[in-house]
Length: 226
Image (cartoon, rainbow, N blue to C red; front, side):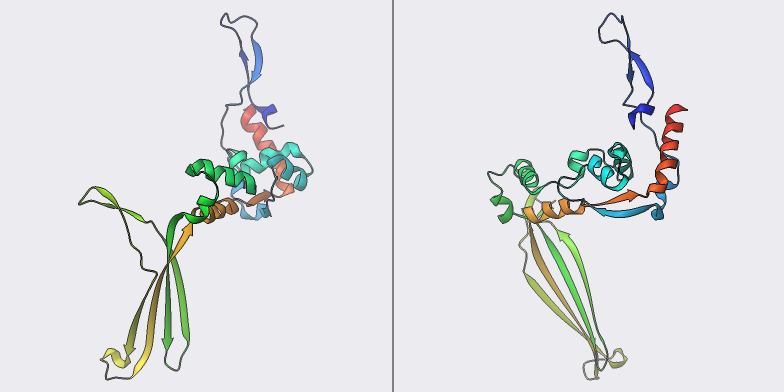
C-alpha cells in the first residue's frame, strides 16, 4: 500500500539497455506538510511488547497490517529492526557484540558511568522542609589538557555540606532560621542497566488515531503523484 504510490521508472537489468522494466522508485523521499503529525491530540500512547513489529501493531490498532507505514512514519522508525525494543535474548546478544564481551556477565560488573545525585534539603525553623533532587551524568574518564592524556577520576561515594541561615543575614550569634543540607552521591550505572534502560525507552510509541488515517493517506497520494 505504501509503495504503490511511489513514482515508476524504466530500468534495464543488463548493460545493453534493452528490454527495460518498469520498477518502483523506492528511494523517493518527501516530507509531509500536513499539521496532522504535529497535532498532539491526533495521537495516543501505546506500549510495545516483545515481538511487536510495525505490521503487528498496525493489525492490532487498525485491523490492517498494510498500515505499518503509518506506525513507522509517526514514530520516525528508520530501521524497525533496531528502533523498536529488543527482546531479552536479542538485547544481550547486542550488548556482547557491541562491547566485545566474552559473555553477558561482564555487562553486569562493568561500570558505564556514574550519576551524581545532588539532594538539597532546606529546613526552616518552625516551618516546612523542602527537598529537591537533581541528577547529572558523570563520566569516569576525563581529558587532561596539561598531559594530553585521558585520566580516570576517583569518585567519593557521598559528601555532605551543611549551610546555616541566620536572622537578618547577620552572624552565628543570631537565631537560626533555616538550614540547607546538600548531599552529593555518586551512583554507579552498569553497562547492562544502561543498555536495558535505553531499550525500555523505545517501548512507548505514538499511535495516530483512526480518523486521521484517511487525510494522511490522501496527502501521501497527492505528494507522490503531484
